[in-house]
Image (cartoon, rainbow, N blue to C red; front, top):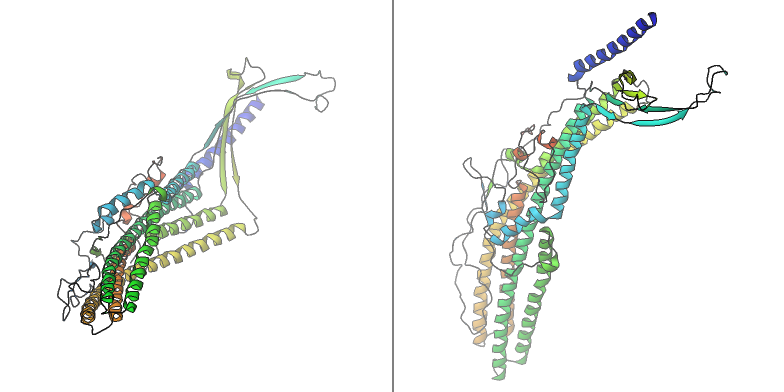
Length: 552
């Protein structure tokens, strides 16, 4: 009777201790150690310095498509003719203005570019890899959340064993019982309560990392779309240059025919014929050379849209769209429009949570465990009520000496956090720099194009005068060659400037964040959801949220 009471008291004591630790875990459940996260402040200018719309410059004549052969009619003017001035390429957005849309490339009104851009989301392998990385980060969130719950295990064991009679403390006269069978099927559970917020900080860090991965995915998407647009406009620039050179070759061939006719009649010399032949051959070689760069741009576009360069082609089309008018919002909005800034901000939140994880190592850990099941030496009595077994236990551990490991770990993650803060602020500075760079490029290019058009008009007028003086026998053909070369060079420069203007427009849109904004960042609950990636490179639409906003 006394032994039964002692056993009952022992069970009550163990149960009481376990229940007390469970109660302690519940009371400490809201305790989270580590620093609270606050987004570091950054400075944003009240306005962009370069956001001054280009002023109208003196108008000029349009750029002709090619040279004009000697002996044919030429358009000459005594002064630059008046045409419509170059249109503006950006403007400071008003509250009523439409912002840049997600399919920002449609602003260029080029159907072929639109079709190519749509293939990026489906077939680009770099984007597919970034999408897979995002879903992997989401899985890590669920891995961290699993530590909130106990680990339950069940097993079935059957064994036969023999105990040594010589090693037993029983009398040597005890009979040898031989081998004994053992059957058991325990159901065990262990749980480590999150007393100090270690698991909560791990979950917060994983969520921030998944959100940063989502922002990185959008930044990669924006970069690939922009790269495709730049390569496409560069390819179209080569098409326009090929058209100009082909037209020049045709004009130079007519010039050669004319010089040969004049030589045969004795009016001109064989030297003029050789000069005309040299000019024609050089122009033909230059027209052929354009194909090298065009082929490289075509191959680059094929890779961006996920196709083999061997089976991909873009038809020649020298027509190029006019640069769109890009609405430029206030600088403070830039912090909400750039996915790389959002990724840097979420990386800071992740590093801050990791400090809390490291700090929790200074506090004791509590582990609760329980086992229940059946155990018997006979298979027939295995699942009978007398064969039941159970146990309940608890353990509390505290590290008392680690040679400074915990302190060094906290210092390590504080250093990581300070690094992420510096990288975040550098990302913000770089973003403003890129916007200013592209704004200045747009403004200066608009003025330069107008001046270059004036130079083309002057070169055209000079070519007309040189041709007329050659026909009258006043000047040698070498003067015509010099005038034609200057005219062609100025036309090429004008074409290159217009191509540069288009690519600069793409750069400005990219610097402004494209059509992305921070409301598209997946929420903390969305990154923890179970969802499988689709066959497309585009992830499932996230649930929007508003994370801590950078302070302008």
